[in-house]
Image (cartoon, rainbow, N blue to C red; front, side, top):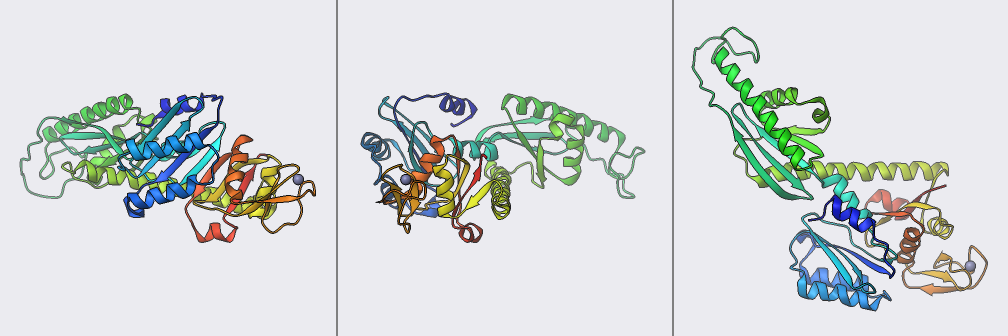
Length: 366
Ligand SMILES: [Zn+2]
């Protein structure tokens, strides 16, 4: 399972040979294994790292079981290693050769889908779940004293009010309160053990409110939502709730990024959009974050003198005026250059907004 310690391991590597990074979306909604294979072959075909391409193809042929919704492979044939992560979440397709593994897309997944804790509460007990990157890691339950319902009839009950209102007694309130406190203690221990970073609470409005109020402040700030759910819900139902929150976080992050890009580019401050302007800042090594549409490929040109990248339609190098040679995919080269200069890359889902700005753009470091 991919986690923070795996991430730290990848980030601390300083390979002495090139690394091939492959992200492949294998979500069943996107097709079957034959279709993924074809997409993969197309993505790998222009690469010059033959040994790594062979290693990746061998991995998909011999080891990969085509389960999950996304897979990430890093290969460094020069050092003789290959690492793979099968994910229960879809990833955006990307193939990139470089000096180090491209981990940014994985860190995005950890940010949005890592370390979810879900707690289902009622008056007697609680069930706690931990989910990481779309998978159930563990679940545990706690059961307190039974809450006996001794009917007394009369007016409707007011939670927390003393004095024996209908259907509810002081004794019952005490039992419920003790059970809730036990549930909170149980949940906190569970969350701490499982390194939970955000919390969802499920149950009736009343139970959720009571549970939430008993949580220490530090944990209250980690609660990202609540929802009505029965104590007998399956872990698949609970996971669906956690995934919906992760997806919303992912969408929000991307929408925010897009807004930043559009606003800054319009002002001409700190961002550019469109292929020609983006290639120019890539050539200058000014890219902090390259934003592009998933699967984007464009024929282009590369200067024979200074290796600057240029769109397909130019006659001479925009940097030095030298002669240009055609390249089959200038996007791939641009991503590689941006990463080599310490930039990051964000692959986006296709959208009208992205199309309107030319499907590629960059936030600049200066
Ligand atoms: Zn040039």
